[in-house]
Image 1 (cartoon, rainbow, N blue to C red):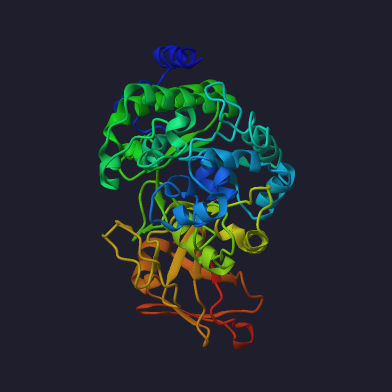
Image 2: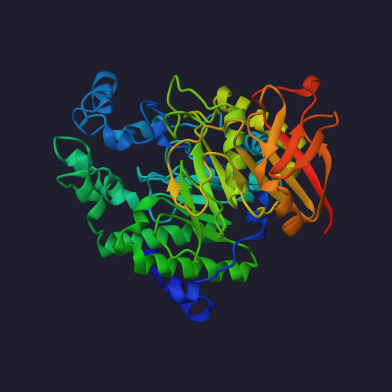
Length: 486
């Protein structure tokens, strides 16, 4: 089957518009639905939810002596040779997985696309595969999780995307070779399980041709089976050895999408691909200023693991909404991760946050969906014009932090934490800017308040004054300004 898929890749790319070169892949269009939809749900769910300890990297760290995962595993499950990671698979039953309920929750959250991880670093496929028996259709749940999600997500009118972290599997289980464990006994699952002297060596090692061909075939199998509208890759495809295969993969994906008349794109990290061949994804970070090319931030609803662990805490809906507004104002999309339990239950804390976000977006979503950037993304201490670099320092969303979006002749001004006196001063809308760029502005309404808002244009900005009876200090305030002439 592998050779058959690889031959099909060559045939499609020979006949298709896109070729396996960056020049050919350059300027592939970003889907309109993606730029308009802004908000998606990421799902880290797999065998690692069974031990539910530390993080979704349990599968690797349980084989590293001296780690909490190693000690936890010995204490709760015994010797690594008699009970290894593979032995969690029969415990991954997903008996409470109801994809229809999941899809309805995602719809209620206000998300416009859904992206489950089809295969994480651990090498267990969450779908029915012809390339490996280690998959959820043949083991564990004995269900094609990805197919069921695809069906119900699309039935709710949402776009369907997929993430593949297969690349990292080349080295991920290698530490299990340092001592007697089941890793060396089950290399058709754990392999290649490359062993290196340090983690930096893992990052620099080049995967062999057999692994790269397998990676390409597995990814193309996903494309053809589920027709995802975004294909997301984690960090390790930056490895230079992947480049020829990544170009073949991108060409195949874009050619197949052209056949199917679908708008698609690839999410990549850092410098894995040239900037106009896909969409840059920044994990748990942001850019300091507006980015001219559409991008994406992925982040986690949990304050700890991306996959389910016991006793985890969650970010508040308000903080996540502030983060989303910041990203959208900078010409980005927001991908928010959840981590279901092994039985298929979504933790109640995650459900509560998603529903709260959905309620807010149902009321104020006009300032998010189908918007475009303003002349500037906003103002405040975190906005540093001319320094459009990736920043992983969390933003303190104080009353000084303002953000802007636009739709047709409407400018939306977000105050990310309304001050107690209700006064918001917008320096970007000074008299010179208004006269030069905008023409006449009328304050049509404050979306988060039914009462009239006083406003005065001063020489150095626009002063907005929320009535004291309508002030909710610390809440997000949204001012809707209508541009009526020039």
